[in-house]
Each structure stands twice: as structure tokens, then as C-alpha cells.
Amino acid sequence: MKMCMINLWIKCLRYEWSALRFKNSIKQLDKEVYEDYIPSSLLQIKQVAEELHNRFQYTPDNILHLYDAMDSPASCWQKAFGNPPLKDDCDGFHAALYWAVSFNFDCRLLTVVTSNIKDSHTMLYFKNEGLLHYVDYMYLSNGFANMGDLINHIQNRRYKSRGTEIVASELSYWDGNRWN
Image (cartoon, rainbow, N blue to C red):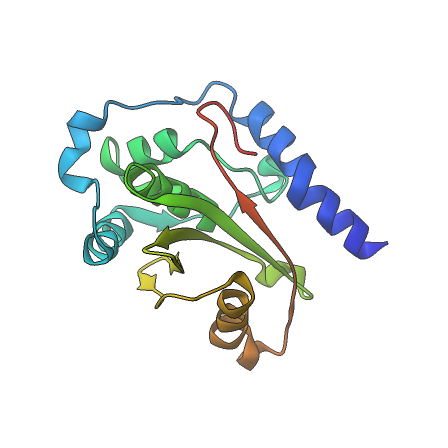
């Protein structure tokens, strides 16, 4: 029953809730205004993540966000670069990074749900030259041949010492109007 509820939340309900919660958020920005921040290489992705981190203040979602609401990439980027700092949690940070990275890379938000639900986390996932990578704030992974290897790396890097396991994951994409 618990896994059924987890899957229902990460694959459906949080998208509906986020669309409702952030229905008035901006959905698009003028790319040319931020052209210098649009990465075209792995090194540039890392540099943009570092610059974004300088404009970010970790603020956990609260009851008004049902502890997991995802704003639009454009809105998160605008908050970080138009009126810093971006006050959000992991999904807001990585949604902002998604905005910049998505111009030149196939990317998604990757959410991992853990057995200890409070340790669940959202990162940026993207493909480069046939390999899968993820960004966890300022950490840029090496490339992985498949999703299983990438998830195993996250498990070992983030959760092995905490004694918790990844029990589910979800890749979310922005369709120009909402997360899916």
C-alpha cells in the first residue's frame, strides 16, 4: 500500500498539485536576456550550477506546498537571477538549472524517493553524448551507460551512510506549461 501511494504521488498527484499551486507563475523567459548562462558543455553546466548556487537560499517546502510543490523552470530561474536569492528546496534549484540546461541538452528532473521519506531528493538528469548524468546542486556526476547504474551511484553517494534505500524514482519534464 505504501509503494502504491508513493507512486501515485510522484507520478501523478504532485504534478496536479504543482500546476494548481503555481498556476500564476511565469512559464517562459526571453532566452537572449540570459544567453551567457545557457551551457553547451559539461564544464559550463557545472559553472552555471555554481553561479545558481550563489543565488540560492535553501528553504524547505512547508504545509502550503504539501511539502512537495514544483514551480516552473522559468519562474525559478527568474527568482534566482532577477530577484535573488531563489528561496526554494531541491526541486526549485534544479528546476532553475533545468531552464538553462534544457536549451542544449535533453534533461529531466530526477526525483528519488527513499524508504525514509524525508531523505527523498530531486536533482537534474540529462543526456550528453549517449551517457546519462545528474547534477546534485554543484555536484556533476560522470556519465553512466544506463539508468540503473546512475541510480546505484546516487544510492551509494547520498544514502549508503544514512542507512536508507531508494525505493522509487521519477523523471519529470516541463512541457512549456506544466510538469509531467
